[in-house]
Amino acid sequence: MEENPFREADLSLRNHPESCIIVIFGATGDLTHRKLIPALYNLAADGDLPAGLRVVGFARREKSDEEFRTGLEELNKEVSRQGHNGDLWAQFSQSITYHTSEFGDLEGYAALKNRLDEMEKAGASPNRLYYLASAPEFFDDILLQLRESGLNRSETGWCRAVVEKPFGTDLATAQHLNHVVNETFAEANTYRIDHYLGKETAQNIMVLRFANQLFEVLWNNRFIDHVQITCAEHLGMEGGRGGYYDKAGALRDMVQNHLLQLLSLIAMEPPADLTADGVRDEKVKVLKSLRPFKNADEVGKSVVRAQYTAGTVNGNEVPGYRREDRVNPGSLTETFVALKIMIDNWRWEGVPFYMRMGKRLPRKGTEISIHFKHAPKVLFNAGTGAEAMPGNVLVIRIQPNEGISLGMRSKRPGPAATLQAVKMDFRYQTSFGKSSPEAYERLLLDAMAGDATLFARKDEVETAWRYVDQIENAWHKSPAPPKMAEYPAGSWGPKEADELLDLDSHEWRRL
Image 1 (tube, rainbow, N blue to C red):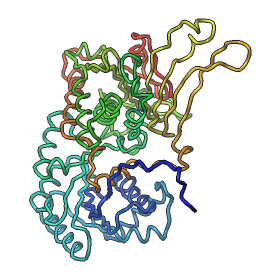
Image 2 (image 1 turned 90 degrees about the vertical axis):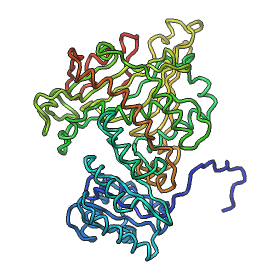
Image 3 (image 1 turned 30 degrees about the vertical axis):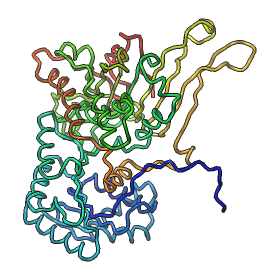
């Protein structure tokens, strides 16, 4: 077919990934089986995987290469976005091998070094990407042994480290982890992964804002009334997750990383360029502009914490949080948090950012909604229906059904001047005829390309922790901590979260 001369030019700014050997620490875990290997398989199916790429799984369990591949294949059949093609898997899996070692055993790393050197002599790439997918308590050991064994250096290629969250549990532990990482890898070769930034709609936030003059001129306190960020989960503590979650909680598990990252993308100034540091410089400025809390009383007025009690989700009765497996019966860990955040800078002065995250809510979904100020009520006053309906709301859906919609008002057909709320809706699936790539697919490609734009920088992580630590200290170290609210499982959270917005004459947008 002859090429259409009127087709718009390709505006892709994407870097090209380089072939490498990916070493995955914690290779027998859920992350490797459910996310990393399926992501690489999907890339292979799309033809995006660099030629000659090799994968080495590193874990403590004794396994042969074939046993490791078989386990990976079984789960790939269930979770792969592309479906499972036996012939493609047979070809792809030949690039996967397994290495048994304790994370703190230097001899195991020496053996790994010899193995990688042999692979390189046989034609594999000298580039090495180390992915820390283990439990975080092993990060120090892994990084130390990589340094001691010399695996963090290559004479003919590059060496990079991808570090999974959590990046510490507070500012002090985050600073410690950053110190250990940077003792082993330069900051430019350190990739702190936050999979939310790999989601297609999250990536599209900057394009929406800075490639469309229509929105950017309105993106300030003159036109925007408030912003909401919601992350709703219908699941609880299935699969033994209670042991981890009871030590983390909603604030540390989701707000410190995922949701503050989304907020910084929404609120940032236009970067000078699209380099990784150009973008991240502006995100850090937002985080530094978050209004601090002076004491526990201020935290209590702007932050709501709550736990779910017994209730019904999707027709199934579920226990309260304190009755879940591996949860302390007297736990003071929050499963829901709502915040009113103020950004003290020129663009956002006076605009509240409301954020909420909760477990055991009615449905799963993550979205950002931009609520514009109401039009002057001169032409369409009370009586037309305008007063009772929402104004202009721009909704950015992160998951599921990724897309963007704009709510507006229109005249209903007929002789009367009756208004009706309508929306313009863009969905990735319908607009582009295919589902969006998984977040880990994009992030793995970027790590192989040396593009750190969608990865958190050291100062981003630490600045976010400084903000979150104020809240955590008010909850757990104050002599008069703000109370823990409750909400029944299957509801949209505690009444205190609604009251937080009621004080400003606002209400939460229902997903």
